[in-house]
Length: 259
Image 1 (cartoon, rainbow, N blue to C red):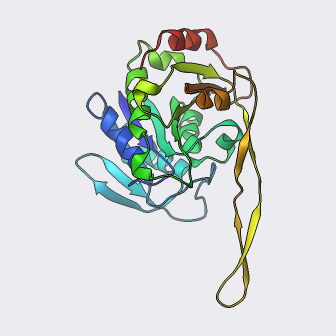
Image 2 (image 1 turned 120 degrees about the horizontal axis):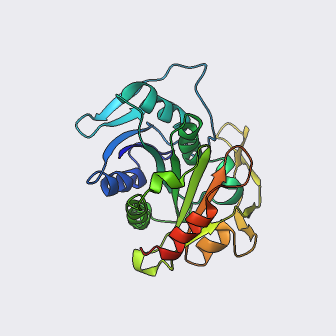
Image 3 (image 1 turned 60 degrees about the vertical axis):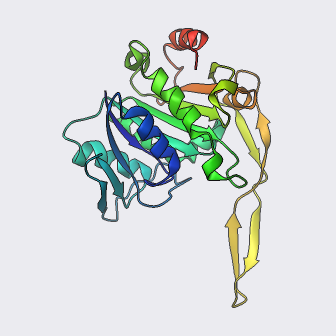
């Protein structure tokens, strides 16, 4: 397949490097990703600012873009590629995109922008602790291996209905520790939503919007529960708001999938 990949962590992030190396042997891979980290920027488009593109590796078709993740997707298939890709994959994100996080996520937005233009889209994340981890110790290769295998599934692209987005979250554990694959619904993640006030060297106040993860709500059919239980979560999202299609076929895939 011809695959366009992007992310919100930036073109030099280890997650997108792992994704590229997992796909490039079997597919025609083209990369357009932000030149700097664009996490939690949602579905922002640069309509009032020019975009600039930097060639990172021409031989490998890797490009950096000054814009946001959704800009990168548009720049990829709308300008830099000679034809539309068969599939857009965004990731591998550093951190979860579970529950309502999908609405903040630049990773999800990069894949969703492609879906709006008739291109099947997948967002994939490695569920690690965003603040307290060694990025070099994150098991990005587990997510990369999963994606490499699942896109080889017979008629995989036909499983993705028009205006549907596939959101995947992979536990930050070695491949042999993954219990399996579950087709899930969105849960809800609770945060403290605290705003930290600090003072600069001139005595002026400034603020950090953040918050601490406080756990999740939802039953054993949710994405949050599945990942917490050691499973890979795959959520089929109907972007038009209706019930997700072909769920029976997705469940069949999950029941027979072996990492």
